[in-house]
Image (cartoon, rainbow, N blue to C red; front, side, top):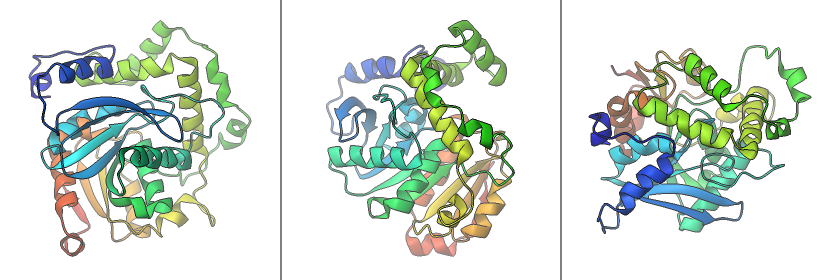
Length: 321
């Protein structure tokens, strides 16, 4: 990561292959070395990377992302924790089954399936965007497997009116099996939407997205997951915000001050519903661990290392540069 940030290393097209090759040929033999694996679980084959020795930390990527988006986190925390970043089913190098729900409950169950395969009884969880929503689901339904939860710009159920909800319910995500737009058109759209799309980690992240999206099953998974995020009910007995109020895990919310996907205004709603949670605001967009890794990982490390009593005694709202 140091070489990458100093522009002495470039990896494009396939982070799993490129970084995996570097890790496999590094000559390191210690137990905490960076490793890439793909294992069969009760759900499907799941691809993951891991490094470090210590209490386990599971990292869960966002919509369209892969485990590669957490390489900065692995580099930052592996000196103290065993950090595992997975590709959720439907994304990256994991299996992409058809006719599965691709919602938070399904992804949470897939995560516990990986934990079972790796012999991990309980872990801290870090999730970005959609991965943050999955991390919360682990806290809701698998609290016995989940310790502290760090949420980096997490996807949350919409509170405003969702004017496209009714027609979207009629659209089947399996339509993603068809390639409507050729690759050059998809790439041009991404470059218009994403600042600095040709630079460094951003370009590598786009490559990772395209590797899955340009596969029929990957597109179907992407559309299904996006649809479920949009359609999630905010209120009611099983509504997101109702369930959030019952979360028992210690939680940290990291918000990007310039996040245009999950606006920082959501923080006040979380504070109202979950007053014991801690909050940190960082001058970045939607992927804090990539955009501002030092500030993000300093906050996460302090949170994971704090005792329950110490964390509770601190102010619930903090800010970093």
